Image 1 (cartoon, helix red, strand yellow):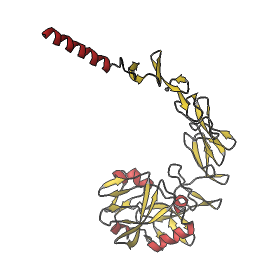
Image 2 (tube, helix red, strand yellow; image 1 turned 90 degrees about the horizontal axis):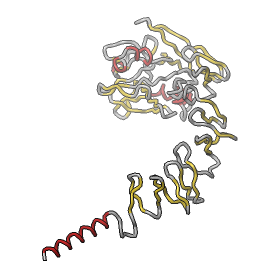
Image 3 (cartoon, rainbow, N blue to C red; image 1 turned 60 degrees about the horizontal axis):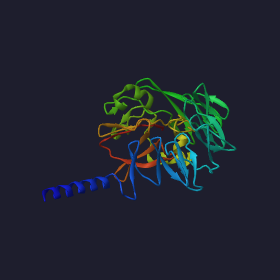
Image 4 (cartoon, rainbow, N blue to C red; image 1 turned 90 degrees about the vertical axis):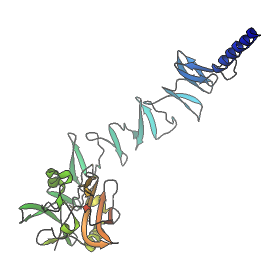
Length: 328
């Protein structure tokens, strides 16, 4: 009797083992190069697992099955694509989008207004306001190259920025006429106890100006100048154009995305909130004298947005923002 039980146990073990490896099962599960697969919809050839497309097997690592015509195509730079899409072709193992009447390599070129241009040091740019020479982007006003630090492009004409000296510390500032207003073309850099350089780095102060708390900002502008109020910011927005105020007032730095049509030259100097510095290279925020909704009315530029967001309300107690002065 003991022998009988032993034989039954052995038979059961063999049966379970056969089931676990797929023998005797109509949906056989096999392995190919260490991968499990179901025979029928897949096949193993030369230790490579291949999928079925129509009546053809293919290697999915280098080919793909296009469902529209149930045919196998070579991948393009490792990607599947629509072989019937006239707006994109595979050429030299590169997927090339259409631009105008031709196609371009997005790794080294870009398309602007149906024209193909080479990238400048790997960057795309607006060809109407930049020219690329030796991998360097130069500012262009119509067809004239200009220095954006001392000049600006207004209605296709290169204009010189004017200057004045802050007698308190001898620093020189550029300024521009925008409509009936006169604005500083740089952020204020005057040092006070309640001002900061971004990351406490004085080099950032020289580039982006200082960050001030609101109480200091209200009185820190040089003699003959003042911190603008809400109405003055609104006049600027209306004159420049509400929908694209941001892009027209941002410095025409390719990373910042502005055209600086009026020489305002807003730079992304970031801000300080609750003792933490944030968003340099991405945002610029300017104080005003006006209170809005129990907080301070401020104007906010963002790298990814072409508008200037006003009002943006910031709490008085824990924000340090940029100051841009306007002439009395």
